[in-house]
Structure formats: structure tokens, C-alpha cells
Length: 346
Ligand code: AMP
Ligand code: MG
Image (cartoon, rainbow, N blue to C red; front, side, top):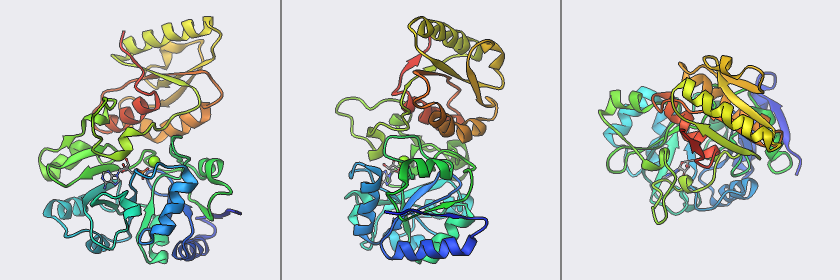
């Protein structure tokens, strides 16, 4: 299959109009959002949605998010719109917050992987919104990467994984947030199933307290049922080992330096994921500065690109853990999964 590549800046409506037509015709179109690139299909057409799972190699038990272009478009997708959802939509849509509630009959089982709930969000990206409007249907979209790989934050990443497998890629430049949306279930006690750009602290200003699913920062235990099917699958893994060093910046750096030396003795090549605050600890070693520890959003924005850059080039990535607060919770969720929960604190 030939994959058309369009530029969102120079080919604006031409790109989104063609994309909309392709989606209505049952095709697959990758598009930019403020979080990561999505791989979209007609969310009301089960057959089209199945093609997403094929193109990504995604396990069919992992449900998708429906993307809409205006708040009222959620109405036909849910049984009704609960008050909590209304208040959250007013506060955070368009934006990186996905809400899960009981699905209506028009939502195909292919989207929800057979669950009776459906995840919906309104992205904050002009190209994404124009594409959804042009398609005239909700767009079902997971991240536009091969299943298991780090999510794509540039069109180049999407091309790497999807060229020849999908109909079209719309290039909208790098994504602002860089990690996938926050996923909040509103069935029962509001629970964050996946942290993202809209933080627990921000949601609590609207709802009071919310829970965070245990699996956000912990590996699933044997026999434990995942609240979100996505939590049981290996995620964000580069083609090399990743170790996370926990503790104060100085303590984490001393662990990293020790592991670096040990790995070098074993003949392994390493890179350190450093921060502005800690780069001084790593003089003479190979490191990249991911961002600023005091602004975890900068770390989120850079993580997936850094994982892709180093994947296959080095044997070992040594990364600092940061406090799991505010956007740090999303960062640690992705980093821990990329490491397969390989953590050192001594
Ligand atoms: P992705 O589309 O790759 O961003 O992943 C969507 C995430 O939302 C995955 O972790 C899914 O497991 C989760 N998700 C989507 N729909 C539901 C749902 N109805 N119930 C629980 N989790 C969901
Ligand atoms: Mg994904």
C-alpha cells in the first residue's frame, strides 16, 4: 500500500479533506494531536477499526479512544452524560483528558474490545479537529506506532513504523505534550487509569479527590485484573535495556555512575538520560539532557523521542526517576513501563 504524506501547514484543507474522505471510506489516517500522533479510522465502522489493530499489531483486547470535534458529540456515544463528565469537559476539553463512561449501542464492540464502556476525548490540535470534522464521524485512534514501541511524537516516527501499512500520514510537526492523554474512568469512583498532561491535581480542583489505579506505578501481579486492558501489555519498549535509578538527584546519579562503570567493564554501551539539574554529575560519560526536573512537562515532551533515538544504538539506558507528582506521575508511568519496572534505589 502506498502511504500518502501531507504537510498540515502547507497543504492544510487539502490534507484534512482527503483524510476525511479516506476515513469515511474505511481507510487509516495518522494525524497529529497535542499528545502523540494518532492512527485514525471511522469509529462507527467495526471493520475499519479492525484495520487499526492489524496495522499496529495491537492485541485485540485493548480498547480504543474515540476522538470528537465538539463537546456535544459525546452525547450519542454514551448512555447519558454524567454531571462529573460535564464539569470536566468544561474545564479541560479540548485537551489531553480522556473520559470513560457507559457506551451507547452505536459504538461498535471493535472499539471497546467488548467492554460496555467507551473512552472519548476532544483533542486540542487544529489539524486533528479539522480532520474529525471533515470525516463527519468520531475517529477511533490509538497511538500511531507499532504495538509495544514508544508512541510517535513526530511524523518521522510514524513513517518509521507505519509507512506502507496505512493510507495517509498528516505531518503536523512535533507534539506539544509528548505523552498520551490522561485516561479517567467515571464508572464508579473516578479513577485515573493512565496519567497524562491533565494531572490528578488538576482533576481534583473539579471533582474533589480521585483515585489512581495501582497499576499506574506498579507492575500487574499474577492474577490481578487490569482496570484498563492497556496496562497488561508491554509498552514503550526500545530495543535495549532500560534501568531507572530512584532517590534524590545526587543519590540517583551515584547509582547511575556505578551502573555505567559496571556496564562498560562488561563491554556494554550506555547512555544516561540526564536533567538540567544533574548533568554536572555525569562529566566524561555519554548522556542526553531530557529536560528540567522542576518542569516535568519538559521531560514528558522529550521522553519518547529520546527512547526512539537511542533504541538499537546502545545496550543500556540509565535514567533518573523523579517524584511522581503533577506531570511527574505521567513521566514515571511511561519510564517505568519502558524499563519493564527495572528500578534501582541502592
Ligand atoms: P491508546 O489508544 O494507545 O492511547 O490507549 C488507550 C488506553 O485507554 C489504553 O490503555 C486502553 O486500555 C485504555 N482504554 C480505552 N478504552 C477503555 C475502556 N473502555 N476501559 C478501560 N480502559 C480503556
Ligand atoms: Mg498506544
